[in-house]
Length: 360
Image (tube, rainbow, N blue to C red):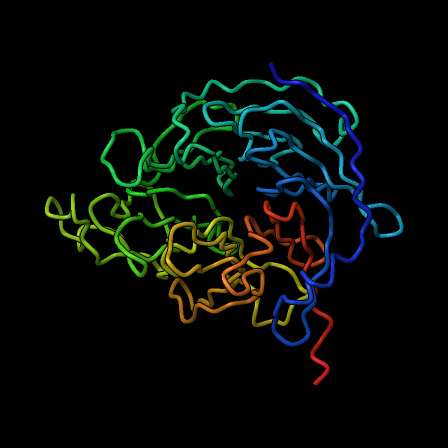
């Protein structure tokens, strides 16, 4: 049974220990600070009044981060005792929280941060597998709720998995939007075209350097992105690849690093950063878990010209030093002031990246 708790957690805006953020490398003119302390912070969603909602996976809680008048923040545990509540989204005043096999809607969430009423359980049939089972959800400009359903394996071919589905906000009119998606933990919609873009985590056990992870573009319903037959657009799977040809599938817009574990992504829509960042894609790379030399543990930037990627580069890095990591970025979101918020489930932080201009 879900417990609905109100627990004020100390989270005054203060610098993190120098050994951590002093190591983070950013382009000239940018800086990073701790915005809030949130235990095992995962997915991010912004309310209409600026409330930052933060999910967790292992902590079993959902938090709200609220700014004080002096610019500091306080963190409130608004939901507790949940089962892997990784997926969150805010839509028309309501907070949606996805466990592995259930989705709840909490009405008028920003009115009830001090005492959240019981949520409505949507009539959505989701798999209960825990492998790649933590949900990522989001609302598109079509007012549909999108949910990623990962494959319950490293590589397999099971109906009803490895896809992105969508439905009405109440859970009705469910349909499959995209297939061949191994394990997406990041969905975003282009601010001008309204089209879906998403990250996908590549399969394991093919070596350190293949296959790549992916940034994908799904401008319409019905596209297949290759899994389990083809990886990265041109690498046939050793077990399933003989069954299909890679040219039959939609290739990624950008091949990302192998095993970097790309999770949340966002298009930059603010005005704080220089103009060349508008409409570009920031990606949180959680970091590899089984590569002989670690990779990822950073925020990257994919620059676009139209729907074509023209560069893939580090934006914020330094959490990985000498094969030891001090943080693992999970999600990214643009705050109303144009700064970029980054969650970190290893350090239990939400960072804020700002731009003050290049002093050189």
